[in-house]
Amino acid sequence: MEKPDLKDFTLAELRDWVQTRGWPAFRAQQIFAWLYRPGISDFSQMTDVSKELRAELAENAVISRLAPEVEEHSGDGSSKFGFRLADGSLIESVLIPEADRLTLCVSSQVGCAMGCKFCLTGTMGFIRNLRPSEIVGQVQAISDRVKNQGCNRINNLVFMGMGEPLANFDNLIRALRILMEQRGLDFSSRRITVSTCGIIPKLVPLGEAVPVNLAISLHAADDATRNELMPINQTYPVDELLAACRAYPLPSRRKVMIEYIMIKDLNDSLKHAKLLIKKLHGLRCKVNLLPYNENEVFPYQSPPRERVELFQKALRDSGITALIRESRGADISAACGQLAVQSAAEDEEDM
Figure 1 (cartoon, rainbow, N blue to C red):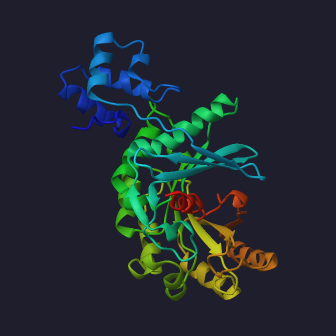
Figure 2 (figure 1 turned 90 degrees about the vertical axis):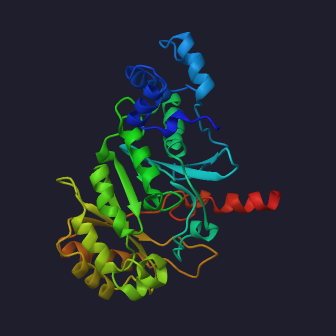
Figure 3 (figure 1 turned 180 degrees about the horizontal axis):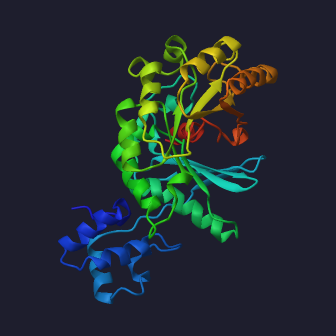
């Protein structure tokens, strides 16, 4: 029987596991705190735990630890980290420094099943879900790296890496609880954003389970255009998705983030802006406008800057907060929708 990885357990689950072995419940808190200290990879390092208990832990469980196998650094300061998992799969995380904060973009799956027509990651197809330990392991590895370099801690986590987070719902929730646990990595829910293409049945359960920020990959306000870009829209069309966003248990003073990739001559006109304004009526939100990252795989192009700015002005004039987000890490395939494709292709060439 395979030994459990203790980093797959929330604190409550670890407490249950400890008690099934006949150990006192307080041991769970003691062990859990050790799991997320920098540099801990072996039970023998848990110095305030008895030798007998450490030996039993080593006999009955394991502690996983991710370390970057590949690193690439962009001219804009962002960095991409590739992690090789136990089964040989590759996942990637992106660290984005800004003037006053560090943001880490985290993967939730190996590959993605959503098949969005503008996303290079989607061409990989879906391989498997990540376990909680593999999700949290990305954060822990880069957090340790940042601290060792004398930088401040990571401020924000965004689940916008490989995969659709809500398609790995149970493991996502467990990972979020570990990340937010004070004895774990102690992230505030205000500093965590989950981005989804819009799996409606999971939206409200997400907000009820963990009060994290919600980002919606919308990219079009009409069904015809969104159907072309995102197959998921045929199951969960625009109006139903935005209705679900209005039902999301959003904490006070927070807004749903609407992600809108702007593609030349497809969704970038003032007509599209006016429709978006109409569709967002009554939703507490802000819009991130993302000029498309051009590539050799898809025919789409980025709009002229003045067209993006006109779109932004229309939204702002209607009272909607709208920001233009510049792509980061495009020179190292770390921008939105570029993760792991190049590395996966290189793996195939090496076989």
